[in-house]
Length: 194
Image (cartoon, rainbow, N blue to C red):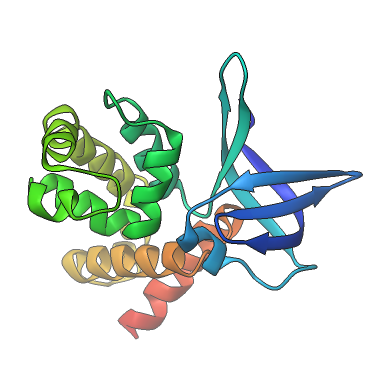
């Protein structure tokens, strides 16, 4: 699998970005959140990817955050949800909002998304219930070292945890590159703790 693409952003449009790597330009299908998080053309970018292959189709999908890609892949496991529908859902609602809808089993909110009916929304909730919590817990565990470091520096554990989680959410929303995510989350958490 192609895990990520790093290069120069050559262009972007509704539902896509193009990244030039060496002499090759990759066309990546993306959500509008990812498109909006991109810097101006000519800037270095890194996008997480998923390569979708069928007998007559090969498409590369790009994601600004690991949360968005993980949710996209989980949506693909639901019967009747393909890449196009999963991307529509991520465009209609940011990944964090979609996760909240799924975890609270809010089928009405899900059914209001483009292309989803009540039956499909119920199927999504049924098939993904509990799985998203595991992902969120695993993700929270990824920041344990940062939280421990802040506690060792004398900060309260609850405050450090809240500061790190808030910093991580902001960094993901702003499209901070995965390669500098940990350093940026630590910097932001320290600033918020004062």
